[in-house]
Image (cartoon, rainbow, N blue to C red; front, side, top):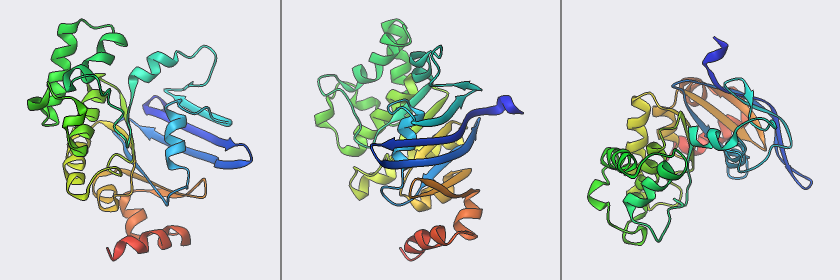
Length: 247
């Protein structure tokens, strides 16, 4: 079954100067898993995602993608980045491009597909996220929720194997959170492999297959949503979740 692991993260650490942000992180992601990473601000969640995406270089330990270390000299990082999509909390759309162009550019430049193929893929996923009517709009003409749905379509157009979401709703007004979570929920139902850093606890409980709770740079506890939300074992997990029980 080892070949089923998309990611194996072993003894991962990340230090900025003297500040150890990640300490000895171990976990696995299998095909079709929806892994939600939860925890207080500053617990290392986003840094972990940035290490998986190679936006940060791990200080020590390893991240294996289908058994291959992603920081190795002979590892093809650009091919890897095409397979591992990323959706940021601040959307990161190109402001000078239309919605359609935003979703086509990576498909043409990275996947080397023709403009016709790129447009077809872009339209397919813009329709999927409900943004097809806005293909000629520029990002400044869109609401935050619409921008994030375009960012998700852009990631999907690359036909990645895994999508990483870094707090995809934290920059949104409350009324826009639902529309973005609904898109991610649909992807989960369709079997996409996803790693989601989120502070939306009800969403994490309902949508994930695996929950990782981080505190102070370590994985404090992990398990099924039922394990973590209904029967947490660690004091820190209980304390963290108690704040959401009443909300």
